[in-house]
Image 1 (cartoon, rainbow, N blue to C red):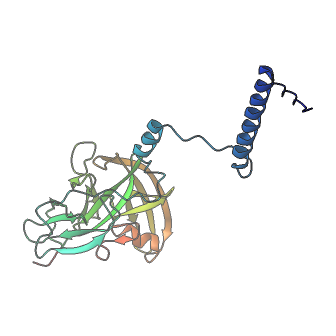
Image 2 (cartoon, one colour):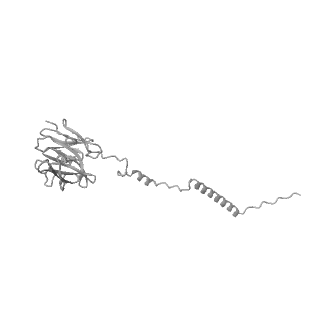
Length: 277
């Protein structure tokens, strides 16, 4: 007698649902483990910036004061004229802020002029309005002016010293309170004997100097600071003080008070000298 096989019991719908759910849970755990292991040290990766934010960052102009590769200003715009032929020239400080030294020059003759030609190719000049027959000489430097500094030029004619502003790609006679050119005496009128620049708080301060002596063996030296506006276009007398008393004629303070200089630049040595006619 042949045995009849027993029928295979069928799985209930709930059994299949449990199996499917278990498979889904196992798959989810595997995916979670893979993502977690991809972090290396367990740190969560940062989300990328939105496209708009990234573009704005790339287009933003860098702060010039914080950029180590920022270059200087372009300097004064190039002009058609240059240093006149026959003028005496001398390299001077940078007057237009491009980081390059510039050139000061003097011409001779009845219409003598003082001028500056920058490394960028700009030339500006002014007439030397003086009746002195002596050959002129000049120095250029940057001095305290208002709340900042400005380039100035001192043109020594022997009798007096003319003061010019060399700011803003121009050369203009600095004016006194009366609206006339501000000048320094070189002993011709008894008001002073020289010009100098004294370093104060890291900046050179322009000053008129006067060395006086009763008998020529000992001198008293006074210094009067010159207050300049921001572009050195206007000047007025500032504080006055005695800087030496009973000093000998060879004392450096007396020598300096009888010459024209600004910082280490001395006329006749560190600037142009008017050519002989």
